[in-house]
Image (cartoon, rainbow over the protein chains, first blue to last red):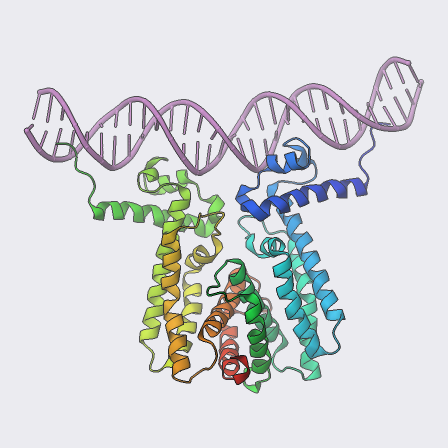
Length: 203
Length: 203
DNA sequence: GTTATTTAATAAACTATGTCAACTCAAACC
DNA sequence: GGTTTGAGTTGACATAGTTTATTAAATAAC
């Protein structure tokens, strides 16, 4: 007897609405600019309502970050699945990476711009991150085995990642001048990574 | 008649002590964790004292960021000056870049992790940033002219920057696993950039 | 239908922080 | 000595994260 608790679906819906509000506000206001009161107003609830579904503000953003990881991982997996061979798969993953950052800059920022000091490091976040990078790591491993590229897979994976993240984050930080943009760098970057990794001196 | 205003040196000293306190607190607490009251206590003053020297909290961090840019620029210029030829200069700039991030991770974070939403974009900051990258841009231009590397200088500069920033920021975000660290990537990255940029297909 | 009970949601309070306005007070100069 | 100028303090305000007490809603038992 007594009022029944929300079903898992209802809870999920509540959490989703909070996360969506947080994402939307984060896009234009940044972490500091997002207030719980604004989130609550957006979801049509009172200021303290989110506390029923989240530990605190940081937890809300952790969840938002995990959601972004999932979307990113899905895009990566899809790109990987479309590939015909290991080398093609790497190219597609790189393209998908850049494309995701262009399509969902806020999600990308959420993944990288929330530092441990802002959003306390949580295991769920670590997991989500690891999952998101798995397609790229797998593809590198395959490509090395297939002889498409050579070198230590871990080193190569980090190089790919670093290169992609580097141009992407500079793009998002609006550091490109003279009309030079992310897409203009994509091809040279590709050339660099492939020609470099075929160089036997870097293994 | 009346008490004389502080000399420029005195004002500079006051501003410096505030900036140093902000830097130190930022290192362990992040932007949000730094309170004006903590800064003031660190400088032995009362909470509102910094307002005599800075517009607001954001201005303090803008100044800190400009100071970081200056130190970075000095390190870059020093590295460039030590070089014997254009190709050597590029290598040294890359090494100095990575070394700076290792030596002063907080300064590096200050340069890149304070987003416009947190610290309002100010012209002084833009200037400082431009100055900091000038050595690298110059070196790329020289290296292209000297034939050490080939391609569009702007594209190459951004690629260098992106690669360096990519591995550096991943390092600072603590994303490296298996004992792999920044220094282990430095040589392969160098190989990539040079071998790639010598490839005529990327110009 | 009433009542008891459980849970969602609210409202009000508490605390901390950025910021500001009025005040204090020491230092210089007439 | 009195006056003025400016550095620094004090206390207050507004806002935001968070907590606690309370209300409202929903269902089962009677």
